[in-house]
Length: 560
Image (cartoon, rainbow, N blue to C red; front, side):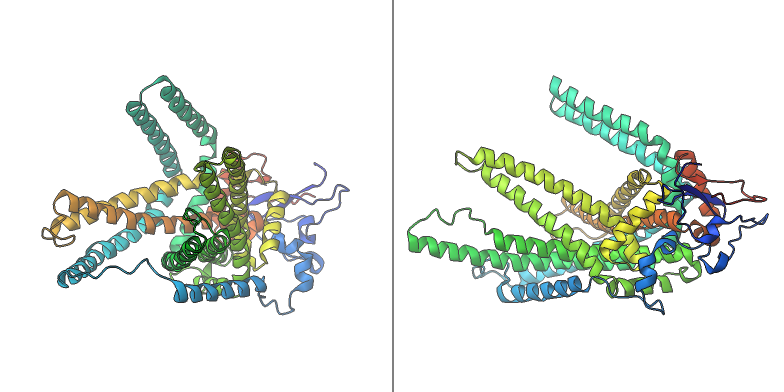
């Protein structure tokens, strides 16, 4: 056997574990170092040998000495990263003060002497659009997305992944063809042809990964359909994020108008009419951008930690995660809003700062391009390089966050500790290459687009059923009103389905972590799904360290 490796038997699957000791010493729990015989029909997990950790325990808990030493005796959860939660609340209070004190939508409008009934007319049509288009589109989109993810896709997950990948390839081909038709030429043909050839090569390369993606997707869909109240929580948080964006625009507009007025006054006093032209106040801009992204990311990442808690409970204690508002849903939401809130704020702040700096670099680049200064060209190049570096940092942080928040939601670790432990887990399993492959996004994106189109068609049918001019007024009738209704339905459908798809993506990440951390517990609660995952993983990644015996093994022995 390779030095530093051991095979640990977890129910129906055997997982290779890197003990991290080149000297041959094993850091596995004692039970993993003993020979275990399993029954003919079921897989039994024996108690620990000599009072050690039971074989079915989590790898993370078995290797976490710091947790055992520092946690309270009663095992009660602790508040993590508290200073960042306090900082977030202080920032929120400051933004509310700024919005109340300086917020505005613009200059006061000139007095309007028209008929006051015109205002009532507009409000009437707006309420009709809400009642007849928006609310039905929300209900239809939610029902379609839930039906597709809970019933249709789980029946044939592998076919769904294949169809989504092929449809993406076909869409790319159609796009390339339209580009060639609209702008014929040698360069156009070569450029679009190269793009299509590269995507076709990519599809061929990842085609073998489809069983792996389908197995993970199916498990996540089954878990989320049993706890569909998580979707409602996600929609509520996302709607709150949209409301925050509107309030931020109100507050930021007031701040910028105040700064502009001061610049104009200074220009008058200095007799320099060009001093205020195009001037950017980088300090206030940076703080406002951080506030915008921080609050939005906190709300969205709270969804991910809640999903991780719900999915982790479903994987390891399914009796607590079987209904819409199961204890898994309510307790996970509570932990996210209390114990884990500081960790969510810390990770979101890091992401928000990078996003704000990237936006400012892009603005500085555009300002340099439009400048008449002799050095503006070089400055634009430097800002372009800085923007690329910040984009890479942004991608790294977002990738780190998607896994760190799984551990924050499941185990209640701090943000930094969660990210470190999840990477340690994947390294120990030898799965660092596996987690970089993601085909689930194709299925989720195609599903969201299909739901949006159906929602738009239903909105179009509703508009055709209502009397002419009833929804949008007499100024917009016929085809114009139909297109407007279709657009409203598509936007609402895309919003609802995209929120639900993000929930499923977070659930898929949690499934991967659960399978890596404690496959015995996952198998005890969902034996068939666990077996299917193990088979698909081995078929795609033969060297991933997972060994699947016959479905009803007579005996199995742990090898050290």
